[in-house]
Image (tube, rainbow, N blue to C red):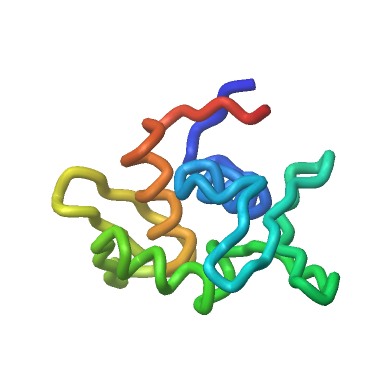
Length: 116
């Protein structure tokens, strides 16, 4: 099903960011295994089998490094936030992380994405 990036739920946005950053079903730099459940939630499983959500649209420790990696600038514009990637892609959102992750997905996949 195709959806507009601006209409994705946080869960769908996190899933698309994981796809864009090519981390699905791979080990990250800390040795965590990233997995997706049937509802498209992305989890990281640590070496000692602890699980945590992959939520770059709400967790600064996950979204912040992506903002730096992709050179995303974020600024407040009225009641919204605007994210800009090299003046090529601009997206808005209710928080800086949502705006930045939307811009990233739109840059890599376009404004309409296929949700598996």
